[in-house]
Length: 189
Image 1: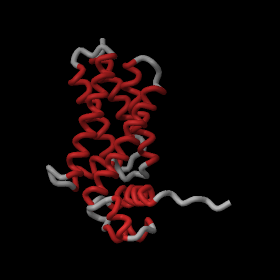
Image 2 (image 1 turned 45 degrees about the horizontal axis):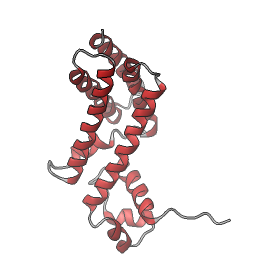
Image 3 (image 1 turned 180 degrees about the vertical axis):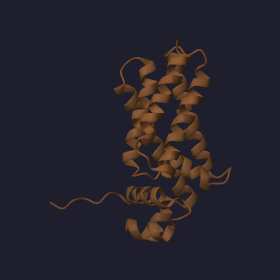
């Protein structure tokens, strides 16, 4: 039986995902994405009229994936919202293995994009959505200041993911998780 090839759009996005993750948004040209995805230039442009639209689609897909990992980690931590907040760092630990130490796609995109660009807007929307969901968990955990706790937790997640790219130390997620435990215990008495 012949295996069916993924649709062109999926091949383009999968190729962009791999190349952008490893080489950055600016380090990859459209011609390379076309060559490695095995599509014609006209096919790529039929799905993504500009590189900016391809980058935005890549970030939307990365957002769905990352928020799914965070939800899975929270659920795996149990029903106690305090444990769920700390459990988010299991997703960070998994990201270290999954990203092969290339860092967070959103932090990387933010470093390469101009304010007001599609990439910047998608990154900002992602960060706000994650922080809002963490605020919801912090409220459920009884935090005195759920907004402050959500800000601290998401900054800690971002810091751990940025350190992934910079320091490449697989022990950092455990240190971030221990710090999250201190923050959560102090904020949710």
